Amino acid sequence: MMTTLLILACATCYGDPNSSHTQGMNAAILFMLAVTGLVLGGLGTVFIGFARRARRLAAQQAAGATAG
Image (cartoon, rainbow, N blue to C red; front, side, top):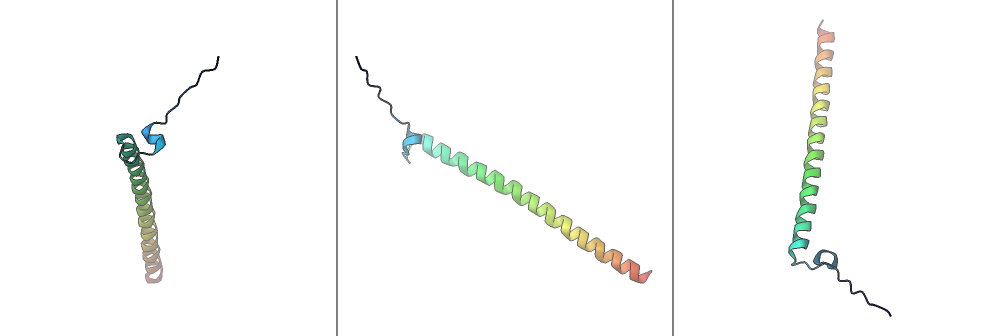
């Protein structure tokens, strides 16, 4: 005797754009992208600040070496 197993995909897997599961997953993906962008942007800002400080310190040391 052979039995047939009926398997249905959920709304998320099937891709129903009006489903609350799909909308929730899309919101989660956008949230993770936003967090990643904010972290990378913050790191970039810190490194740009470090480069500016290093440039300013080098200019001050060069000015002090020529004056003294």
